[in-house]
Image 1 (cartoon, one colour):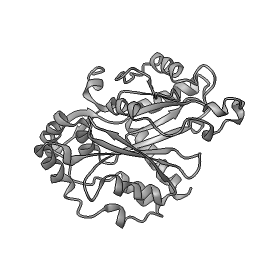
Image 2 (tube, helix red, strand yellow):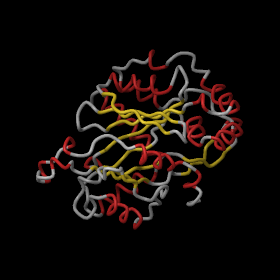
Image 3 (cartoon, one colour):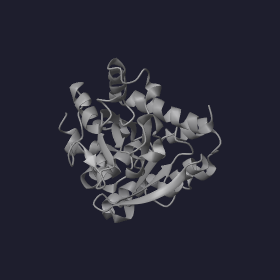
Length: 298
């Protein structure tokens, strides 16, 4: 297993342990005959959330994956949520794309900024600079270790009122936010987001309905849906516990580009389909961890 495979494998292993919906969906896909094993699933992309402070944020996080052969692509702006994001193309089509967002901390209230910086200031220098980026196990361990002390419940709840994204990151840090099942390569009857959503709801999966259960790009080429985040009992400072949003699962359908419509299904590859992301879709997908969605299923 090479360095990148070690990192992705480590991320997915811990993520699956934490998000029971993943195994539930995979088991049902196998039972329905869509796939033979979990390895048959194409992982469209994985996503991470970060705090936009000088020693962290996208500029730090991206060093890991740029060193592993990823290429930085388009920028996205989310004005209402005060977020920046970029996506990164993998070295080969076998690996997932990566979507990294960061909170524009300086645009929050003074109270929220003070809370966030009381934690992030514990990180004195950019941690990516002291990481051995050729050591997959070291990178995997880093992505799952706390960057700052465990937050207090009071700080979490204060942030939650102003920025649910901020609250998620202050507790979860770099934890994998979601992975994405590519549905367009599944068997007929399941290979569109609309059809796959029917399957998901039939097996009892709750879908994020912000902006509609299907989020579609203006060009019609990218369709996405997602589960509502799993609720976890989190332990805060002083051993206080509280139920918070964890991670979720996303589903993507990338339609064939007009110039490649003549190709037969067996000749289609990733490069023949709609690439990149769509800010309008992603804006609503972010809300998979928001109380507007999670409180519907509690």
